[in-house]
Amino acid sequence: MINKVNGEIEIGNVRVSPSTTLSSFSKSTLGISSKVLVKNNDYVTLQVDTNSQIGLNLSFSNNRLSTVTIYLKSPESSWSSWSKYEEHEKKSKHNKILYADLGLEPYRFSWGEVESISDSKSGGSYVLVKYRTK
View: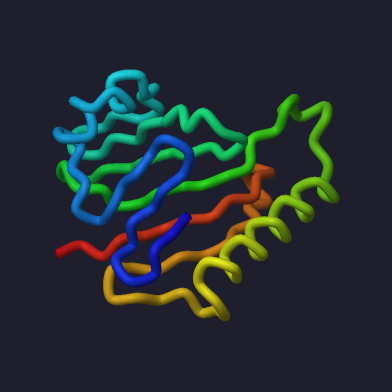
């Protein structure tokens, strides 16, 4: 999923890296079918259909891929079905995947860093990949 040598991420039919640009991604089949979540001047976030149980949001700043948010999709996702236990379970699964791909924390590399997050404000758990700007 995450290549610790070069920061490339491969999930389902999606492959991105620190060198991915918004203009090149937008022209791809996946880019064309992606949903724009945020568009604010030079900042754009896209929700990408991975054709898998893993969700993926790509954020671009000044045309460069800056962050990737990876999360486990829930079959039914609403506040009425939300539970702290299930979010804790998701975070545990994220941690296991990261350990298998990247080894022991901290996950800091020449290309950026990776962290497993449980966000109490949004009620979600996800993996955040932050690429260094060049």
